[in-house]
Length: 166
Image (cartoon, rainbow, N blue to C red):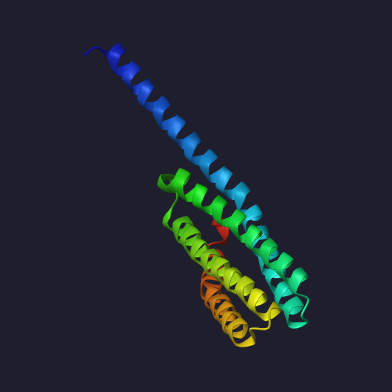
């Protein structure tokens, strides 16, 4: 094989490696750009959920339902973005990012289940099926409490790896 062909092969390989590096960097940039929106969706979902509970406790059923729906919408938006990242960039992610995304998905899925239970509680309490409504309310609270395990794990991942989450 001539030195000219070896040089061409070397340049092509070098070009392919450069393209791969740029692609990985741009993938991580896309992920990093999405994370604030995902976090904001979760925070807003938590806020709406808590407001829904407060409104329910004050027996403002319609407003409580609206806040519960809003919480679910915020959680669903975050979940959809997380699942897109997971699907699209899985091969580009390091183990820390994969753990973070898996943990956050688990957290959001539990919160969505809690919202569903809260909506059921609202429905039954509004029609004076207090026992059934309270049962759904208790389940919603238990699910939200369980989601704190994942939320704490997610926060711990960020604290242990600040260079990856700036």
